[in-house]
Length: 103
Image 1 (cartoon, rainbow, N blue to C red):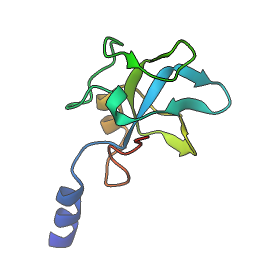
Image 2 (image 1 turned 90 degrees about the vertical axis):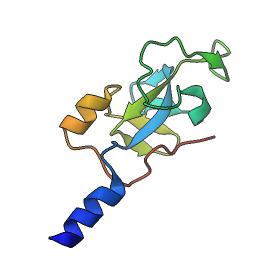
Image 3 (image 1 turned 180 degrees about the vertical axis):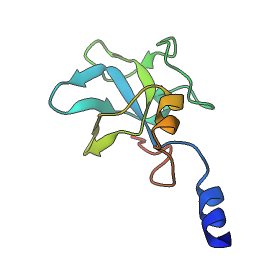
Image 4 (image 1 turned 45 degrees about the vertical axis):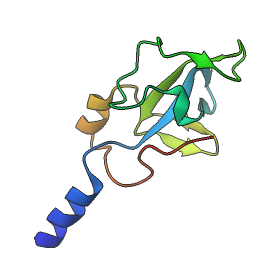
């Protein structure tokens, strides 16, 4: 029982997340993963779009937001949620790549 408790506390309760450009959605492959600097640092609650920074999107801007508990293939993420609470509720938390996706 102690091993399980150690494993759970070492991973934390934050869901896996990627910073994505919300303006880059493609129906076949999902959102383009962008560098973490395009998402609001800290709690990961930036879903308002007010954190826009210059980037390489079609309009020359990146509408960065944290995208939680998604399927990632290459530099694209799909089937996730922009709601951290929803990701935690559906069990999408653990150690795998939390906060990764820079570039």
